[in-house]
Image (cartoon, rainbow, N blue to C red; front, side):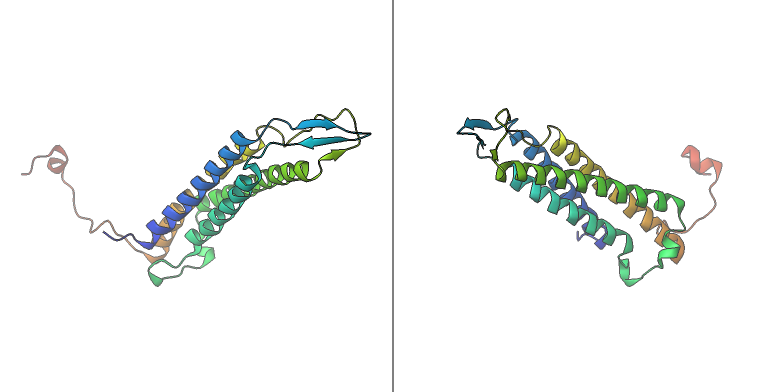
Length: 194
């Protein structure tokens, strides 16, 4: 059985959202708590163990951006070659609310992932300190993990938006894929037919 375009888009949003989550969690778990200070003459050089934190954080950011792009496509894509005006889509209050929430959660996850990745990268590249009491810090503990969960939440909100957009499209186009409505008798509900 072939997948419909709505199912393919939903699977793509799910895949990239889950990938962003997993990469963020791996970045959090692989991040060392601090570097090793090596004292020199009037400087401290921080040595950090080799780990994939920056690469995982960067890939998590890219996956989140792809999740958001495909999430937008899930809402505005012309399924079955029938486009619907944006005004008709956002006439649905539920879609409007969930769209704003999906945007905000995506932006917050992006900011947190980017902040943690850039901070970790700066700590690695600026490893010479003139403060002799430095402890060779890394990015704050929990930033990658928190951002990873927000990325997963963002993907789930985009999926909810897709379902609501499909309902709004169906209402606008007067599509009813449930069949014909007929009379229902009380005897039909009991399971016996007269």
